Image (cartoon, rainbow, N blue to C red; front, side, top):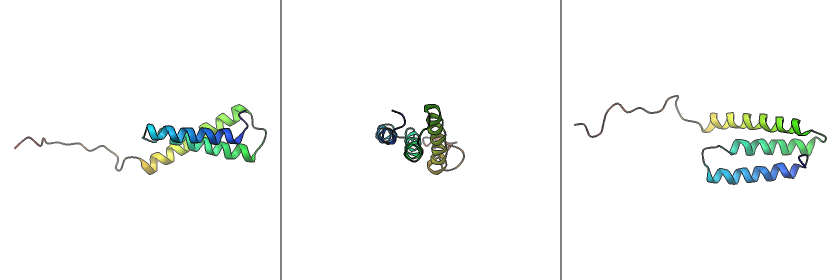
Length: 88
C-alpha cells in the first residue's frame, strides 16, 4: 500500500487542503515531502516502509527549512515598542 505513488500524491493534496484551514506553513512542508516521496516511489521500485518514512521526513524537513527561509519573518527580531501612544 505504501509503495503506491498516487497514495503519496493524494496525501499531499489532503495536506495542502489542510494548510488552507491552518495557515502558517504548517502542513505545506509535509505536503512537499509527500510529493517528493511520491515522485521517488514512482521512479524507484522496491523501497521499504522505513526507507519511505525516512525519505518523507527528510524531504519535509528540507521543505520546511526552505519555506522558513523564504516566507519567514523579515529581520531577526520582532518589533518592540518603547512608547505608549496615549502618553503626551
